[in-house]
Length: 396
Image 1 (spheres, rainbow, N blue to C red):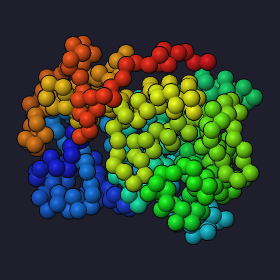
Image 2 (tube, one colour):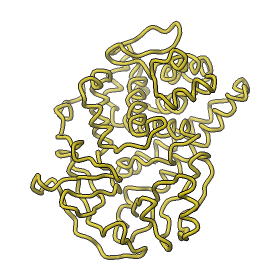
Image 3 (cartoon, helix red, strand yellow):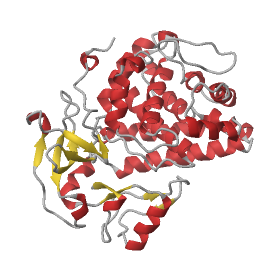
């Protein structure tokens, strides 16, 4: 499997993952196994599709990490989120039952627990577009559950008032993450459009969406999930918000589920800023380590974010400082920005059925002069960071 820029896609290549419509995320355009044609590539270009996953025999081992079944489970979540948000916009929330989310969240949890290597892959289901709210909600759910599973001991310590067996359960964390932005559907369209264009978090009308969402879900989901909807924009340093009548919270006064979703939400907004092209994962992670941003989030949750999301996730196409092209195939914990890579030909010369296996290069064992210079078409030479001290902290 190989993720290629559309400009490097060639007729005859077979899709390894489905292609979904960038604006209607539940609509599959092309299925797994479809052989690309010149006309299909042209149509995808018209729709604004930028990347594809294609079958590439010499990288078939990536299928152990990039699991289509897990991505399909995440896709089912998108459909449920989209249906719910549509019902809210039609003012039919009174007829809705949120209980069906439990089965979906359990399925995703089972997939992550059963495929720990697959958890290293943070894949977007679709390009940001008119359905970016659905894509964002799904990505935040995936990452929140992934972090929650890694924070099991921390959850027990943070929720001392309940039985340890219940304290470490992450189902309600997942439900809260799925619905965290449901209040946006109750905002006037001009407010939503304004945020999409400006990403201005200080807009008083935009800041009402947590309270609006809480009012929609209160009494219909468990309190620990509902507090996520209300408080996912509260910040560790007290600089966050929750809407009219909701004062700022700080530190441990914020429920641990809200702290987790707050980190996941911010990470995805950095990766996919409203109205702008997607940014490299390494850039988003480096941004969290900036002191001005770091103080806004629970350091233990940030530590786990850096644990579960590699700067260069498996499958990322890279260009090394010596000009060679490569694909990230494994993560190095001690030197997170120096992954193990497999050399590939120049993307402009890729052959659909090339079985030639390129050399495997553990960058952590190479001289510092050899490093990742580009990732997914972005210059990341100045974004690579050393393993931060926070990664060596133990759970508190």
